[in-house]
Length: 269
Length: 79
Image 1 (cartoon, rainbow over the protein chains, first blue to last red):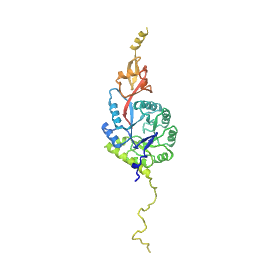
Image 2 (cartoon, one colour; image 1 turned 135 degrees about the vertical axis):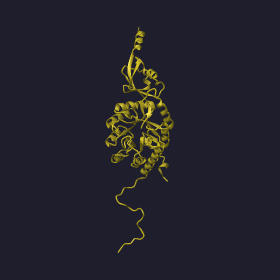
Image 3 (cartoon, each protein chain N blue to C red; image 1 turned 45 degrees about the vertical axis):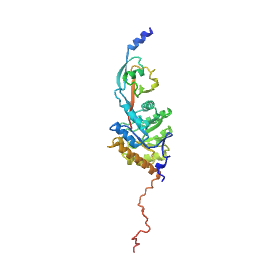
């Protein structure tokens, strides 16, 4: 049987590097570091996101947190969360590159405080500069086609459009725009932000998206490790369904059991 | 004569911003000395001065000035 599990070639490829898991997991908002550790293990993910914040010398949590992530064996994807200009995001990306010794960056430039919507203009400016500097930029973007095309032209080899605003759990808010992105762009697309349930992640994968980045839905579940596992399986299922090819939708019913030989059939009269 | 000037210079204090809070240092302090003094020695941190990244390789030769804004960051959970 040729399932995806047997297919060694179905890795997620980002900037020429292969990832076995299509789930990228955030590391914020867990009730404890131990619970986060369990969730990362249950998600069986290859990449985790993390951030940088002002640190006072008295606060020692940073080092312990770092140790847990190192032990997870996951690739680190630092973010520029909360940055409000290209300049801020570029500086934070440079700090991340040194601190984590990685060229990977989840680029966030926030344009609106109310829905944490990416600022497309600042995002594009920062992406151009960071790609020039050799970063592997994964931009957190809206589902706007032209923005995504410009990011692609700037050299982004993968894009991360939102499903819904961060932390809302509303799922895929604009299916038309997301389908358009999938049809028009030939780079890996990862749904980043806004997913609340494994069914929503499965839907994104069925639509042909290449991966899903999650945080709140797992971290705020009653049992985060169980939710991480549920999402991981939904993502696999959705991916396999996309690969298998979904049937065409129809307006009218079409019997699945043969009509030929139907008993008790009388032509009337 | 030259030593005398340096001594006088060292007596002078500068005021700068450390993660948004006022901090004082002797004039002429290098960034690596300041980090040690503030308790960041050996810690996993990255630094920006006046919103510009200050690479670790520059810390020893970077002398801090009055009014500098220093941001010192460390890893935290993030989405």
